[in-house]
Length: 160
Length: 160
Image (cartoon, rainbow over all chains, first blue to last red; front, side, top):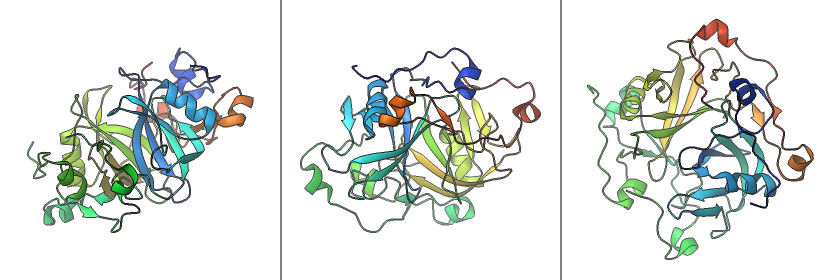
């Protein structure tokens, strides 16, 4: 990796939680989960993963890069769809095993199904959930784009 | 599990992405990642995991339950600290392998280190990051509580 971004070794709990060293913890697959929200609305857009290279590229370029688990490749979000995510703020959590990206999205959509957010359905809870037979409810009625127009015949990343 | 919440088997991509059946995908450890944001401010509070029982309990009770990977046990958030998370909305993503909780937090803090959010540090990006030597910056100056008062001698969950 030709990046100038270096990750520090994890030495103590105090260093990781209370310090100013970037010492991310990657899991047994070399990945760290990423939460991506819309900078303006605060809406949760997607949940994905980065490997060390994707995190370094995101920090360097200010554009979201992920690791695609279905394609097993670095994934510069928007390279295919044009829906680039410009990172306005990048945060890391207490034990540095999760990244939060606050982004502006060109084109207004982040979800491969065509919706603005990947989280376009609610699960009703409590008594309401029981009454609804735990059926999901849609929060977005209209897709922002037609996935066929954008992705063509590329395989759907959803795995059963 | 005595719950009346039932998860549907995952049959087709269309069912999972476009349907109203709750058919969550748990990973090889039986877990699903959860993103928890503050209902009012939209701030990201924490990233955690649920197993099937924790998800069912959350849906039934309207209070956030997680799976603690460090303690290997169901974790009713706030049972020790009093910082209960009341779920105002629960969403699931396109391929149903991630849950979004929008919560109100009793006591105003969610982080075991004592901050309001677990994500209390930014990673500077682009030229700014280079200039800062990629040092983290704190976004919260004051802790909401002292972890020693709340957790006493309980082991810190952060793993190196």
